[in-house]
Length: 251
Image (cartoon, rainbow, N blue to C red; front, side, top):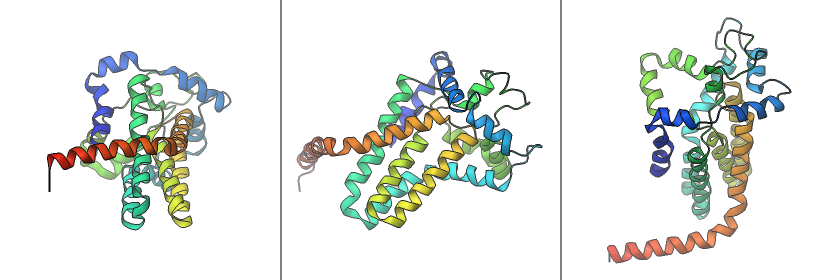
């Protein structure tokens, strides 16, 4: 995870260079097709957000669903370690492979989220007929709930604002749901309920396109499908690393 965080944040070490090569328009076009002429996130906000901008209880629930994601994949791995230790190696490999493979896309094809497209004026006249075409509710509620602590919290977690494709929020949550399903029916129901709620939250709050979620789902399912093939090779690598450790630290 240290390597993942470093790789995630590093492109934003030079924000101007990152903005010069970020992709903004292609997910807008795809999501507009999915939404039959309008971004699904814009359509949802127009239907359900309060006219005066007041953030209501269901929207606060969606924001918290987004915030707790920072703990969910790791809590899933910890749960398997504590309660189903025999499944821990495979579970950990799947969750962190999803993280690490996804972050490569942020380097190769940096793609902006929908709130950024709204910010730089890349939405259509239909989508901008309101004063605020796509409101980033997480920021508004964050300032309301955390008050003076919000800026520090946000700065500490927002290492790369132009990394949206695929959605690792959704991809790692789907992988976590698979892991929980493998250990029991009740944990699986909890995992899939969370992943589904998070998917709705990410689109409604303006954090991701539906396209990002589809790509995240494909990544999670690809990791799961590749696990049986990759496991023997990874075990050989693990044995080699353990052999080096034994030589470096003989008993």
